[in-house]
Image (cartoon, rainbow, N blue to C red; front, top):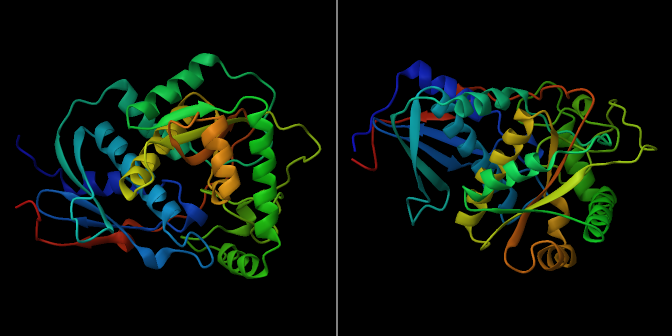
Length: 326
């Protein structure tokens, strides 16, 4: 099969959309390299915020979401991605090499690409309008195509998981080192690669893969109202680096699919940092057939959230003329 790269404008457009992917604390922990025949995704460990994710679980998950965003963008632009995941055994930060072949965009390709710009992480309370069963079936199907399982948390597991989410947020909020570091990170006004405090709801939530408290923000959510969000658990058959990358891709598919049908979403990894919660989720929701990677709140929200700052393509791309597949 003959592989080639599209023109520079097409690559730039696809990368701009890929940079809209959700990431832990909005750190955007990725680097991209362009060679003569392929695009490469590398994890940038220097982007990790302090006191968070020491084993890089959330960072790899974030990069998986960016990889899927890129593939969706290329598909809408007329290119199908052939992805080689973890192509370099001696470099675990080299997460993917993407080769491209010409492709006729489908209506679904275009719809999912459009959803990239519309997607927001929304941790406000969701409305009571029911979610059609077909919508939940659709996100499950899209995740399965990428090697992940999605299960809805039903009572009583839903209540246990919701309580775990609240307790894990409270635990981080009372950790002085964690709170200082994340507040400093979130309060860097007008800085791409952080979570501005003005863009977060008053519950102490933050955009992208929220894992703790941030600086006091002004967006108001009525905490007295009942939250009708459904809780989905996305899991994989293993917990290795490849599984985390695939989980990020599947998470992106769930978020974009939900956005395309008008649903609000919020990806959460914080509760899964607690061993007891992981065991409960694996046993009660995934029935011991998969390992939980991320919890996704899904439901209806009345208005959209503001857009967070993103790094420029020029800031995250390293041009090179050497192709490792040559």
